[in-house]
Image (tube, rainbow, N blue to C red; front, top):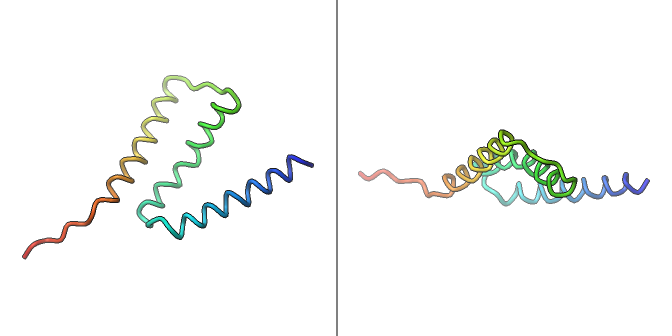
Length: 84
């Protein structure tokens, strides 16, 4: 029973934070941030549950994280206005 209540409360907190972030973050950044969910789950599995990654999984994790960071950096650059 306690685990069900914790899961419900955790879900409510997660969705509250997600929809708050949706209102704040630009849409170009928001599309890429959806990819953080599986990365967060994998990181928490490693930290909390003691799961281990293979070398190939670590490479994929790193590539996905680099793509997310790269997209965030690229989307923050101001648009260039063509000169006349």
